[in-house]
Length: 249
Image (tube, rainbow, N blue to C red):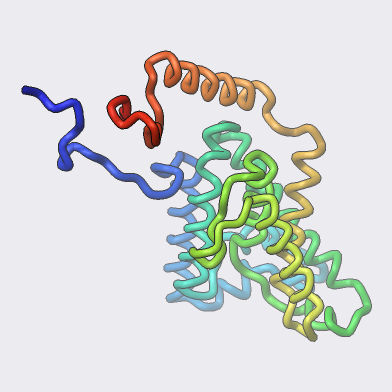
């Protein structure tokens, strides 16, 4: 007699949003390569990191772009790339690779320009922003996080890997923390200003009607077709609690 249930050896398990999409894969590779090179050649940080004084006075106009690929340590790049994978994969599937890359760099460069503009504000806690060096993909990733929350507002995100919080509230909390930390003291909030800049740039870009409408419609239609097929063939993810004989996974 053949069992209707799969054997344990045939079960597969997945964590997170699934395999790396093309843009995410190449961004991770580029960041890792840049990190390894900068690890052995520290002067690269000063040349390619974001330093407003260098951009304004010496016209190092590449820095608002290149700073996104440099990181200060293993934990810095690890958490940034993990966040990029967790929140970026579904967006790239929905938007397509070209638009995702465009949005990513708009958020990252927008975060850098925000940092440069803010460095001219005559406030004590911003005094060192003009000469400080900022590195990391966090500005772009904050933009990705904002987009994720706009499309999946009620999707739970586990803060500190333990507390489930809807994505829309998670973004508000992270934005609020960055804002408070950006005013925490001289030189202490440069990176947090960049985070806020990524949120702002991502929000303005999406609200400006730049989302690839056709890609989004195709994505929504595909989800509708999948759900319809599940209902047609009586397939339930997780099964029904009151009907154990009809559980199909």
